Image (cartoon, rainbow over all chains, first blue to last red; front, side, top):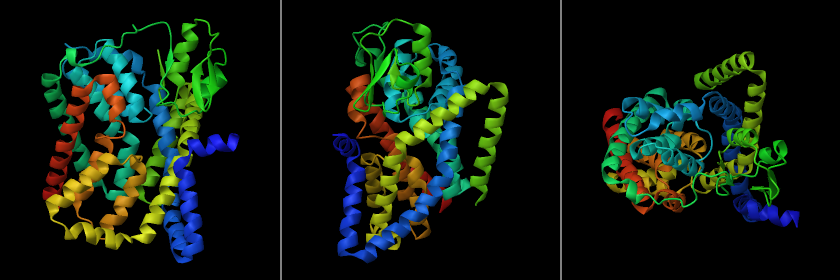
Length: 235
Length: 161
């Protein structure tokens, strides 16, 4: 049973194991060459990955997203733009964790233009990635691409602000409520929340869910929201 | 080890020491977070790396680069951008791959188009974006990102070539 869920959760990895097995049987030369190729990337990744993760987690821990998001309102001009860039660039986690997070900020008063900046920065402008790109593709290449990307984001977020109106954005009926939710698309099943706050979260099939008998404790909940590595807990 | 790996290592160790001095508990929490992030992504990262190794064994990088360069440059750029749109791989795995391809002759414009749409435009994440922000928002953001990605690629090609 446990093996079954493992396969279900790691379809792509299992597919690659089968491909390698087949290559080994039918074309051993290709299998050897594949392993040699992979070894180069593996070596590079193992050297750089711990650094990327630690840097990302440090940024995420030290830059207090909750307090700076106050500057994101509709009237805040250049300051709001800058803050949106900062929030997007220091946030950890994949872009699909950014959607519910940025939506919450939108509900709290951030303008559409700033939401676009935040989402785009979340996807593209990451400090650890910047160094990684310079390492493999050269400093000039990196600087130019990132400079142009920032200009592009500024331009098209402005266009989106003219074009998309508040009425175009669906209103989540549930008011910003007492009840926390776990965004199952973003949750990667690390189990950190269940381990630290067993009174609120339990793990079901490699995803965190809110335990049925949880009691309202805002300090606990806010701590869990902050600590989730991929910002999957929405409150 | 190259300059950037060392630079990143030094920066991280410096940041860690500084963080540790300011708040021990918070630093340990951050380290734990980093560990869980790594563990959560490890299987998919390794599978993508082995997939890249496999693909490059069947189609050597020289052939791939030559294949792209033989095409009309507009066609190559737009296809590279489309390819980036449908792929969902973490960007940090792609940088060394693009590095390999560029050393074996891939030109700048399609490379940049691919890199930029890879992170900025997402077909795989489109349904999630639509659910949260509505169709108009998702269409506009992805559409504009795609157009701007091509513009960035063309500009970089002109400047760096």
